[in-house]
Image (tube, rainbow, N blue to C red; front, side, top):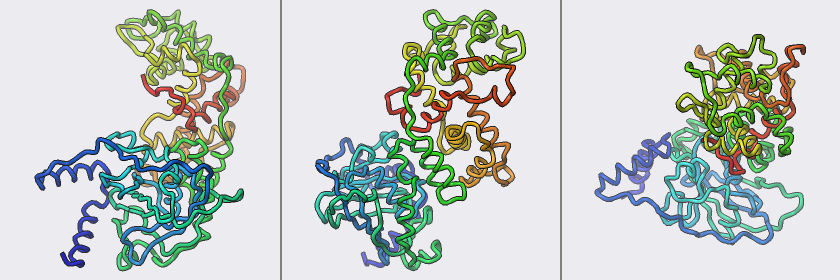
Length: 485
């Protein structure tokens, strides 16, 4: 086939798959295998082509090329050899000014979809479980590159197919002041996300103001930005993703600084947990054994409402007799929340412990981790989840601050709008903050005091603030606590 025909065919195919995600591409591959009369061979193992880690870390000078770019679009980077591939991914996103909005993977021994290569998968691909591979967070750079000339492959966005070749040029000694990553040289601007895979000189002017532009100093400024290393510091990945998107907005520095300010949350001791989680413990203890018998209408019986009212903090300032659950709204909402987060279940007119509820009833540390984990529960691409993450960050960093305006601005910069196209309103952000406070309000050792001013009654306890900080870290899920019953 003449080269010009092959190039034209390549452009047509790239246009066909542009914007497709992994599921669409797998469907296309299945269809193509049917048309060609052959079966689609699914990998059942991941070849082990890695090397042992270096005894002592070094600096790897690598050249990174965007494959098939004409003229070449490349970067020369100096990377610590002990960086995980998950961290290298973040560096590459900064180096090519991409937004980390799509799937990615690395490979050695072939490109990222070569059946004979060893694949290193992003978190989403690991969770999906459709491909055999090792999580990129579990592999370091020096396990994939050893000698000058060694090659590591990377692809980002399986539709636009931004495929990079990372070639080791030189191994340098590690100095005490060496950053994790820096750029030494490079040429030409990178194509932006979602432009259809354009990478030729004749096409790039459609999507890039100045295809020849590249500023080493600007890139190094991005590489030293605090957002670049937050995942390695234990900040939950979905929050890091939001901070990366906010990084170049007027509110970005503030939210990154707040993330740095909350630090690494400490583990509370068991007596402190028992004192502050007493409302949760009361229901778990009461439901143990035969369970809590409900009324015919499905509510707690009056005696249980009265007993629970003595330990559920938000009921402390409720006006009323507190002996009917349907008329004691904070009690009803709290009890229902225990079912929603998988600690209790309703069966034949009773509230019973779930499997997780039994574990939490026996161990307040399990209960703590589960409550922190379920503070953010849902698809990270939804308004509700993103609003909850940023609201918790505001409360964790400044519990008594006024955050509605900055939160509304951040959500607007993330692309959210009201139905009529206007920016996110302060009322919407205030709702998100109120919901976050409500979720934390029963982490307390005392009842609310109706004699206090309203603002003091609604203040979060120190342990509630610590729970918010824990929820924003990887602690809640990395210690083995399941997140559902």
